[in-house]
Length: 151
Image 1 (cartoon, rainbow, N blue to C red):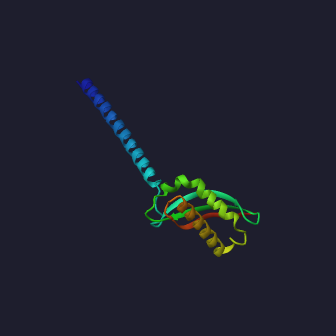
Image 2: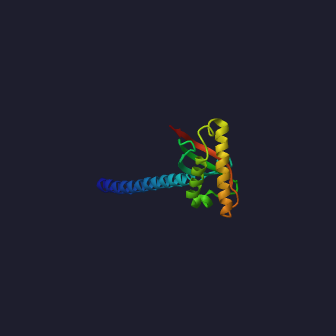
Image 3: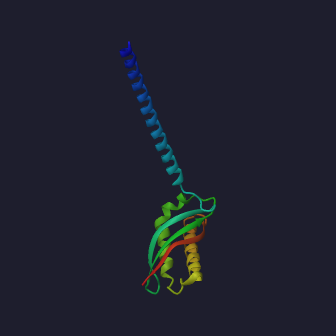
């Protein structure tokens, strides 16, 4: 009888092993799913300080004095705008930024006032382009992520 009792214990142990393995697998799947959901939600475009921004890839431009400048900007849009609506215009936006650079010299963009003038010129150029495309002016401000004057 003691032999059959120990066999019953072994079967019960195997059943609890399977239950434990399934529980661990389900727990791992739940953790993986929660990680994926968190990653997807955290990577969505979020307003910074309630503002809507459109990142424009880096542009290298030759200034009017022959020097080169590398510029990476973010465009602050109206709060009700969706940045995705302007993404198809990215090549034109880059061209506008490059063109504005050709009208300025190193002296023009030197210092805080010069950078503000450069930003306003980019803003006016892009909003002018958008008006030509029959799109409302959308750019409220230009913020520089990078502005490097090359020798």
